[in-house]
Every structure is written in C-alpha cells, then in structure tokens.
Length: 279
Image 1 (cartoon, one colour):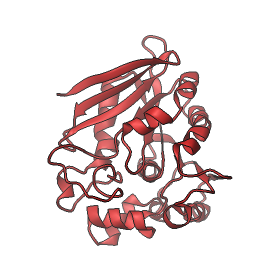
Image 2 (cartoon, helix red, strand yellow):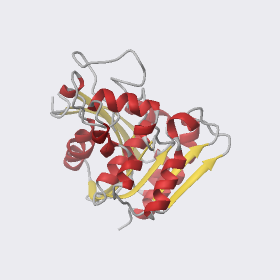
Image 3 (tube, one colour):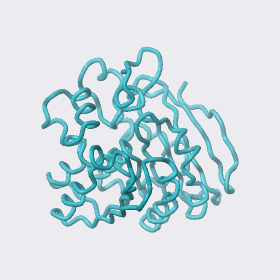
C-alpha cells in the first residue's frame, strides 16, 4: 500500500477526502484528510495544515472543525494529519496524554517510542512530499495552525521552518511544554531527561533562542479548563514581546477547550491565512 483513497464526499463545491498511505517514517499506515476546494483545472492552490490535539485523529477536525465553507471561499487546501502512529505492534500507554494519539509532533529518541514515533519528520517532510505529489498544492504557499498539542506542533514546526510557512496560527496552544505537566511528561518520555534536548520542541524556548516568524495569531478561551496549568499563553506573549514578534493573542470570553470554540473562530483563522497566502 502506497496511497489509497478511503472516502470522498462533495462539500461546498469541493471534495472532502480521507486517505491512507504506508509511512516509511513511522513504519505504519497513516490516515489523513484533505479538503480540496473548487478550482480551475491546472490551478495550484495554497495549503493550510491543521495539527490536532491530544486523543484526536484526523476525524475530529474533519467532522467538527467547520472549515470547509471558508476554505472553499478562499481557495485553500486543508490538510489534517493524524496525531501519532497507530496499529498492531505500536507501543501505547494507558494515559490519554502519552502514546498513541499523543505524539506531540516530536521525533522520539527513547525506547520503545523511537521505532515508530517520528511525527516531526512525518509532518515536516514525508507527508508534505506526498501532498505535493498527489494534490494540486502550491508548496510555496503554506500556512499552519493547530489546537492544544497541535497548537504546540503548529508553533514549533512554523518556528523551525520559517522559509516554508508564510503564516502560523494556533487555537489554545501548549506554548511552553517544557514548563507544564503535559509537556514535561511527553518530552521526558519521548526524548529522555536531558531538558536541553527539549528546546527544539518548545515554542517559547525556540523564540528565546532566536527563531522568528513574521507574526502569530492565537485564540484562547478564557473559560478553558487547561488555561492556567497547561497552556499559559502569557509565556508566549512575553517571549514575543521580548523578541519583537507581532502576536495577536485574543482571549475569547466564555469559551472552553472544545471544538465549539475552535469551530467558532476557524473561519477567522482561514481568512487570516488566506490573506497571507495570496499570490
């Protein structure tokens, strides 16, 4: 199996598809979804990547993200990968915040995770190569966003690859995993106890070390149950202020951590990315 179509459905004049391929990077089949907006034959379209949070697959945002109308309006391809390798022989953990469904977008170096958990390379190299080959994607015009653990992924992937991404945003991201329980558990488990090795997977640490992007957009609900302990957007605000990175941090009154929050502000993010991916 190299690449197969699992399903396609007509939506907003375009096509919502779900696909699977055999990943050489993870050593497992990987499933992802792509929304292809209506477009003229031969056209190359900009791409918006969406990285999901803990426990999620591609299906959470595909089913509940409410992005298709805005992507159709603005002509954006929307790609939603899985959050980890899965399947028989892939190690797991009983906790929801580690193991399958919780890959944290790192390349693991610790056993038993190092055999399959290579989500950084999967997101930064392997899946983009497949998207470029199989879809009419203009890989010179890419943006990235994500939620929670996926917001962490979007920020760190964007900061490490500023020449690849014209736009970076996030919904309720884990901005400094090296300083919060979710991240400390995951980074120690996947990368080992040496905190110096964690820095390339921590947005605040990357910014403090000199990584730069032109600007950032972050939406955060002020009723989010994880706000104070796990997310801590003030750390990103302070790092961006010190680095001179323009950050639009919107604290949204009454919103929690759920897809009710994400779907409410998804059209705003898509418009924001579309403006930066024109031409």
